[in-house]
Length: 326
Image 1: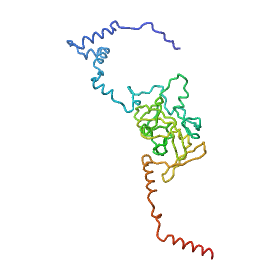
Image 2 (image 1 turned 90 degrees about the vertical axis):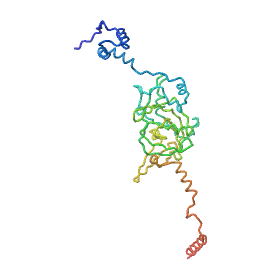
Image 3 (image 1 turned 90 degrees about the horizontal axis):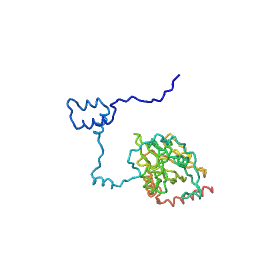
Image 4 (image 1 turned 45 degrees about the horizontal axis):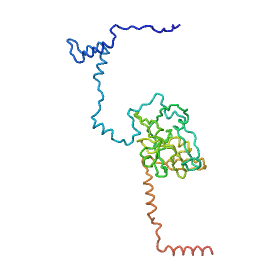
C-alpha cells in the first residue's frame, strides 16, 4: 500500500545561499583581475555567477539614429493589415481547418437577400459556420490550414462579372480562396475581422487578409455565390475547395485521350452544365477569346463566292425537276 506523501514543512538551505553574495562577487570581479583566480574558475565553481556573467555579455537591442528611425516609420506598407510586430505563433488550442465540421448546406437567394440575384445558389463557409456556433463572449480560437495546393486542373468562370479567372479544382481544401492581387484587380472588398492562418510547406504562418461574402461566379450559365478567403501571395489565383463541390454536386469525367470535364448541377432549376478543365498554366481565357475573334473575322476560303455558281445551281435544279417528272 502506497503511503500518501506528506507536505514538507522545511527545506535544506546552505548558509551562504544568498543572491546578494553572488551579485557582490560579480560586481567585484567583472572589472578586476584577481591574483591566481580566473573568471573561468569562478564560472566553473558557481552556476549563478556564470549566468549573471552571461547576462552582461548578451547583445541587447539599441535604437537606431533618430533620423533613420523616423524614415523607417514614415514608410507606408503595401499591405499593413498583413503585418505583425511579433512572429505569428499558433496557440495550443488552435484548430486545424480540416477538423472543423465540413460545409454540407446551401441556400437559394430570394428577393429579401440584399445584393443577391433571386434564385441563385449561395454557398456557406466552414469558418463562418464555426463563428455561428460560438456563444456570446466566447473567445475565438485560431484556425489554420495549408497554403499549398497540389491540384493541376483548372476552369475559367466569370468572376464578379468582370473577368474570367483561372480557378483550381481542389476537393482537398475546406475553403474557397483567392489571391490578394486578383481581389484588388477585380475591385473586391473583404471583411478584415475574419482571418485564418495559412501554413506553408516549411511551417511558416501568415494571416489571411479577410473574407469576402457572396462573390458571384458564373459557370457556363449557372450563377453561384461563394464565400472567398483573401490570401496574400498564394501559388494560385482562385482555389475552389470542397464547399464548391458540395454546393454544385460536381462530377469529374476523365477520358482516354487525357481530357477532363467537370459537370455541375443547379438544384434550384434542376439543370446541369459541363465544362472542360485545363492543365494548370497551359490555357489563357484572354488568349482564347482573342483567338476566337480572329477566327470569326477571317473569311474562310470555301465561303468566298465562285464564278458560275449561280448558273450551275440553276442547271442542277432543272435536272432535278426533269428527273422527278420522269
